[in-house]
Amino acid sequence: MYLGELSGLKLGKATRDAFGDALRALGEKYPDVVVVDGDVGNSTRTEVFAKAFPDRAINVGIAESNMVSVAGGLAGAGKTPVVASFACFLMCNAYDQIRMSVAFPGLNVKLVGSHAGISIGEDGPSQMGIEDVSLACSLPGVAVIVPADAIAAAAATEAMLQYQGPVYLRLGRPKVAEVYKHGCHFEIGKAQTVREGDDATVIANGLMVAAALDAAELLKREGVSVRVIDMATVKPIDEEAILKAARETGRLVVAEEHLAHGGLGSCVASVASRIAPVPMAFVNLGDGFAESGDPDGLLVKYGLTPEAIVEAVRKVR
Amino acid sequence: MTNMISLDALQEKARVIRRHIINMTTAAASGHPSSSLSATEVVTALFFGGFMNYDPRHPDTPDRDRFVLSKGHAVPVLYAAMAEAGFFPVEDLLTLRKLGSPLEGHPNMRRLPGIDASTGSLGQGLSVGIGYALAARMNKKPHRVFVLIGDGEMGEGQVWEAIATAHKYQLGNLTAIIDQNGFQQTGASKDVLDQTPFASKFEAFGWKTQTINGNDMPSVVNALNVATQITDGPSVIVSQTRKGFGIIPVLEAENDLNYHGKPLSPALAEKALALLEK
Image (tube, rainbow over all chains, first blue to last red):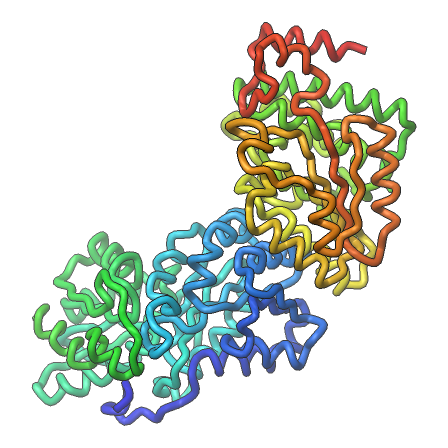
């Protein structure tokens, strides 16, 4: 059973695959794009671009700090570097380099963190980026994007290249359900309502959008009508969408594959508490590291399930 | 090339820049004059010896050579050189570190045109320089990249990542300069974390090296002449200097040859400036 199956969604590509294919497809259109890899290009899928455009691909080896600052220099010279590594190694290992060589000078570097969340599975906690969104959001001027599926990830890839300034794009390892099988109009900073409803709103991103849709389906059976919003851009966050959801449904649940602190839940709560305080509940990884195991089993054990979202909606009702 | 001048004129320019360093840090009542003074010959030669192509009226011109001051705390020497080169009025030097001034305590490329890298967190400049050098190669442009690194800064692991990367890509348009002034924040570099010998380590990483007396202008000019002729791989100048060069007697009298991260008092500045008279 995969997230989204209950709502009849088809299993699609992984977001990292969609990103890699999209980057390759956009290579001709965006001639300034250069890939900078820390020797994980076959995991992050930048290798698809690197094979097509070998003169526009740099591999600095296993050296994330150097990788990010090299990208800063490339951007200073007018290139659009796309720097990709595992979310945890990019954000945690190279945080100061992102701060000093990218965010502070406001350079046009695209930071891509794959293998985010616990859904990477067997490789275990050392490889799981579960604090990356918080770290990225803490840096002034960095846009933070967490696409829900392959279609959104491909659209986000182009949106990121068109955007002037630093961006963090968070990607996952496993295949995920197709939320946007009928197409996705992706815009940085704009939330998308993927299911209408009146009794409560679940705001989610990443693979938890599919989980939220499943939860809405389960709650429908109880006669509860749940709105689902895909908040793919965590920063700058769509305040309008939060305000509207809070006013129209009166209750908010935020679901994400991330620690409790500093992620989507924190960002939504800080907006809601300021402009539309309503009862809220949160579905996330709390304040702990996970463990090795199969991805589906991990999601269940660590509470990232449709049932957990159903429980949270009941709690705020 | 911009501003190629004679050896005598370069030495005179270095003297003027040293005076600016003293004046601006004493006016700011903070900053790193001794770390700036050690690197004065190198920065002066780069800006006025005909080694760097730049246009103060169009600081962002894409074909300019790049200068990355990785040891960002030594920025007074860079501001002084930029003012002398005409990037901004010399009077602005006295706004160093003051609220509203783009002459911040460490270089901020967003606020001061002509600054090629925002630095101050040590260890990142060589990597940034590699990015510039790779971009120049991809764009088939002939410009060069110079990166000035502190010897204490060599304790940062990222510098060694960058050294390996510059060799991998055989960046013949990249010149690194180590300002080996022998001191860092809490003491002598050989005591804090001895990273020497630099030259043989760089050689082992596949770089071409020169080791010079970096406070001797003819040696600096000669080394930059050699370095800028190298095009088949990265090269480094190990510039052996003295922290506070030009005002050493003042530091000796204070019994502090490191004198890290503090300005001269107005009284000491007067003594220092007396040493820097023509």
